[in-house]
Image (cartoon, rainbow, N blue to C red; front, side):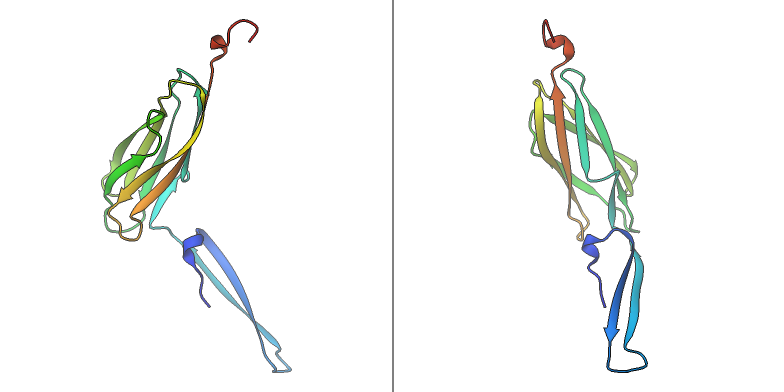
Length: 147
C-alpha cells in the first residue's frame, strides 16, 4: 500500500480492505496513517488577494517557510502583472523564513489575476507559484454626483 504525497498535506489516514476465501476471516482492514510535512510551506496559503479602492495601495503578505535542515535560497521572483503590482522580499530567518509582500500599484480600477513565480535552489521545489487576485474599485468620492 502506498500514498501519493504530492497531493496530501498534514495528517492522513487511508484504509484498505483485503478479502480472502478464508471463511473464519473473510476480510482484514489495513490502515496507513502518517503526516506529510511539505519541504516548503506558504503561509497562510499560495494566494494573495488585493482588494481596495483606487489610490489606497492595498497590500498583503505571505511567509515562505523552509521545513528542511538545509537552508533555502530564493533565487528570483517574477510576476506576470506588469503595472499592477510590486513586491518585496524580506529574509526573516536566513535560509528558513522569508516574507513576500505584494502591493497594488494600479492606476485604474478593475480586477485582475496573475502569478508570482518564486524560484528556489531546492531541486524538489524549484518554483513556488503564488496566485494574485486583485479588485480595485473606484473610490466613492470618484463616482461623482448621485454616487
